[in-house]
Image 1 (cartoon, rainbow, N blue to C red):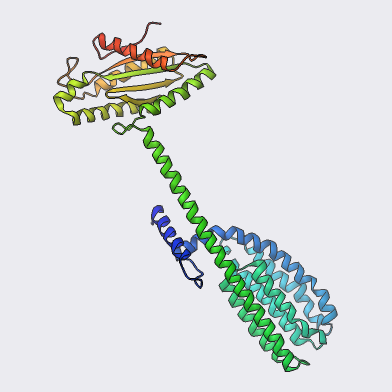
Image 2: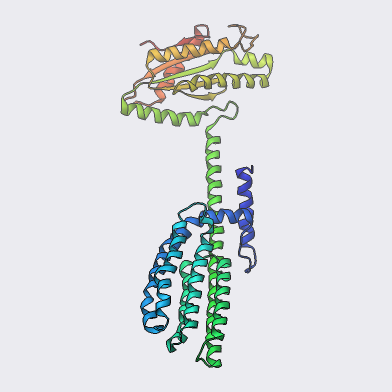
Length: 403
């Protein structure tokens, strides 16, 4: 299966190639042609259905003209006007609601209209009334309807006009009571009208396809730009070493959570976390190993926050933060202790630590009810002070301000 990005690349290349192509190129490359057909199908079907019904009504209305102008053959042709042609075109319109037929609707509408036009040719070729000589005007009217009202695809329409012109030429040869110069004028006017109409239809479809290619490129460029901006925003909010939120992004989230809690009356908890004796770890194992330990601590924090609504971030160096929206003092203490014990249980080697033979953390905990005029930085300061108390008390513990 072709990957979506490969398909997008193919379509982009096809759109650019089409915009640079000479005037006589009408069809897109196969992959883009399928996309174009799919994207424009709904609009074409609406046009065929609505104007197809209008065409049926006008075709039936001309039964009155037949009664006056072709009275000698009227008993033979009125069933076609009122029943045959409406039934054929109506069937194509009805089939347009069947998904499997929809790709063939172009051919169906061209075929039905061509058949209706050739019927007019038969009418004036059979009638002996003088007015029948002017029925070629109906052929021109049908051609205009096919090319500029239904606006069927150029290629099937060109075939349909070819059949119409061939049938019309044969009928004109046998027309009674028309002198050769008049025949020539009728043939020239009909042929040139159909050819000019096809030229106009070609230009319309060419312009439609160029507009589609330009719109497709704009849409793809817009999507690529939005994706790049989203990626840039994500990168600007993420700490490059640990993959957690960085300090700037954390401060933004803190203000959002703080304002939400001030509205709802909830409580906000914060853990200020410091990796114990991290300088000694770096001196003993080296900075690369120190970076790896920070990444592993970050993964443990992420595992903790996945089970809650908490938000983890790297504050700087070996310091981390965990924001706990809507968390009570008691619940925050339980989570902090579980987190501290989890990092200790991970048994990340730290032979240079006087605390344990493994990596441990000290955690300062603070909770507050946001109130008007109170800065969320006060919560950070309170957690930071509790962290210093935890380190002063021997590290590898959770401390919080007294209630």
